[in-house]
Amino acid sequence: MPAQRGTPAPRPSEPAADSAPGRAAADGAEEKPVRFGALGTSSFGWRRVLPAIALCPGTELVAVAGRSPERAQRFADRFGCAASATEALLERDDIDAVYISLPPSLHGEWAARALHAGKHVLVEKPIATTAAEARAVVALAEDRDLVLRENFMFLHHPQHDAVAALIAEGRLGGLRSFRGAFCFPPLPAQDIRYVPGLGGGALLDAGVYPLRAAVMLLGPGLRVAGATTRVRHSDGLDLSGQALLMSPSGVLAHVEFGFEHTYGSSYSLWGERAKLTVDRAFTPPAGHQPVLELVEQDHAEQFTLPAADQLDRSLAGFAAAVAAGGAAASPHEARWRQEAVATMDLVDQVRARAVPVAVEG
Ligand SMILES: NC(=O)c1ccc[n+]([C@@H]2O[C@H](COP(=O)([O-])OP(=O)(O)OC[C@H]3O[C@@H](n4cnc5c(N)ncnc54)[C@H](OP(=O)(O)O)[C@@H]3O)[C@@H](O)[C@H]2O)c1
Image (tube, rainbow, N blue to C red):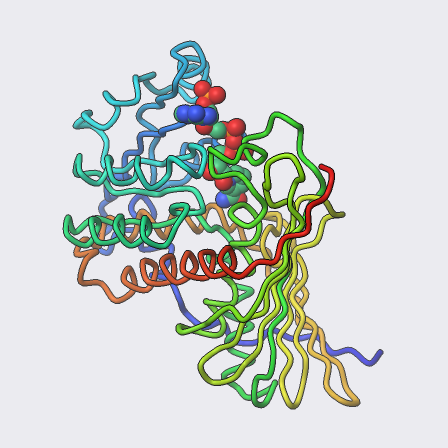
């Protein structure tokens, strides 16, 4: 296959990470980092997010709270911060923001509690388990003029800016379809993702990724035309699924998700002139150099992009939004909120339209 290499110009989509607190303040003085309290002694917090909060120049970890005091203390010892009870965490006046990594069924409720306590919120995906719950918490953030973001890290990777730039340059011609997939192998049987009452299921855990990518790339107004899911015979928990969508301008979309597959994390956009494929679209490691592949009728190009740490960028972007203030009126923050609600609207539609196939699982 003929191949060329190059780097399309990135589309700026996030306030510059270097404007985040702790990086480089305009007057040369160091701005204060955003002080986080972590709600949930989760595996993901332990492995990924809390070490990153502790390392990111714009953020600082002040306290950790969980159901178990011993577990919270273990986190506190590792990260050199305070251990706290959950309710007490929200009352601390040395915390500006709360990072929530509880099971999805608790995201909306605890985000609302944190906002009521006057804290900015970075909540793990999904923001809630229904669109109504997402709307309520978004309205509360607007009312309180506080930053509310989901920790959808992939949105912060500049590879998607490069995709947007190629679309804007007309390299794909008129867009006809989008395909996105996020699937991975089964998890340990006791994992929260297998507990329906905790917001388990593949749609809420994995399906939200390609749905959010469709919202990011195709814009508002997407509707779900149909869906199928493989559900666990014993309790109806969705293990995997597919959905067909359409945009107001007639772009068609197909999303696939599940946790009963080999690993796959990709999307493609197919236009009248070319097809563009992004592999490792949702979870590229920090050192990974993305390769976008653009295939035309008789020509193919590969764009090798610089590696980027999407978790660090997510935290720096959040910290910059807190430092900027005025979250309620900020068009940038409004877009975060609107896209979170739009994604949950699609989740609701997939649930409503899905034709289930019961399987042993
Ligand atoms: N953004 C990403 O890429 C990404 C990746 C992975 C996970 N996540 C998100 O991170 C969150 C945690 O996932 P995980 O894999 O780390 O799960 P996990 O290790 O099982 O953590 C779940 C947390 O919720 C707590 N919890 C469990 N059941 C509870 C209940 N009934 N009431 C109150 N608290 C309860 C646990 O408390 P104990 O410690 O007391 O048991 C633990 O702190 C999920 O929302 C998930 O979607 C995001």
